[in-house]
Length: 140
Image (tube, rainbow, N blue to C red; front, side):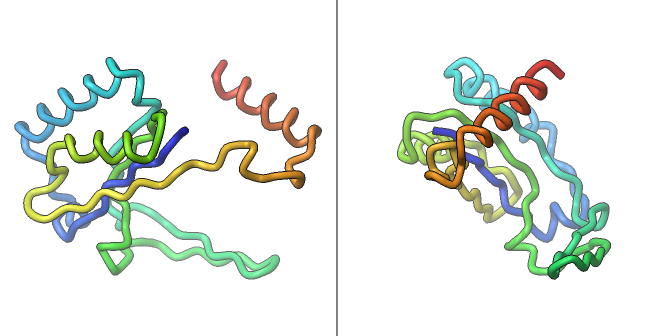
């Protein structure tokens, strides 16, 4: 199963406070462990929302809001995409993670939808299309 592991933002990360050299080194070692275990598929830190934008949808209408955004506890400061055997395995990996921020931090784990999760609505034609897209992304 694939899971998205999201490091929640803090007031400091939203203010653009960069991690210490020690935290960068600790995270580098942790990421190496994930790679050696065959778990890590992708992962990146994100700039503060002051450098981002949101696009809201209402039917055919679109509206754009520039950051920064409020409610820091709802924002994401970074992410990993992992391949694990179970949610329990993902939780165990997260528990081994260095604290991603100075002070209290939170990491959220969410399963990624797989083709079979969509049921009959994900027709053979749509599955073929998805396979073609994934093959193109893999080659890029």
